[in-house]
Image (cartoon, rainbow, N blue to C red):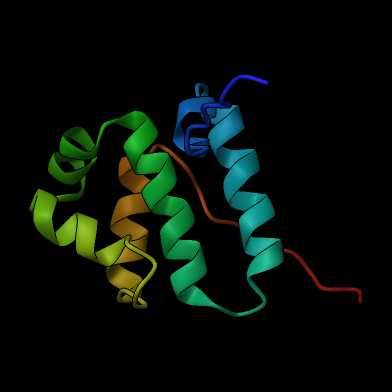
Length: 99
């Protein structure tokens, strides 16, 4: 048997349309269970798909601070989340929880 070569899966390579990005964020928000860093990491995946430099410019943040905020290692401020969501061309929405 030959050697199997594997590469690390990068979800950002599969987020091509605004609809795919929104669906991914929605799924991550449902799965996050209150973990803001998990949601920040999902936003980071989407930002990488869209182009981190452009998202940083559109959000009014430095690229370095955007990487740190969306690394998933900490919970960024809600103002940062709102800036990034807006820069990504997405909207957050609320609905009643019937569960």
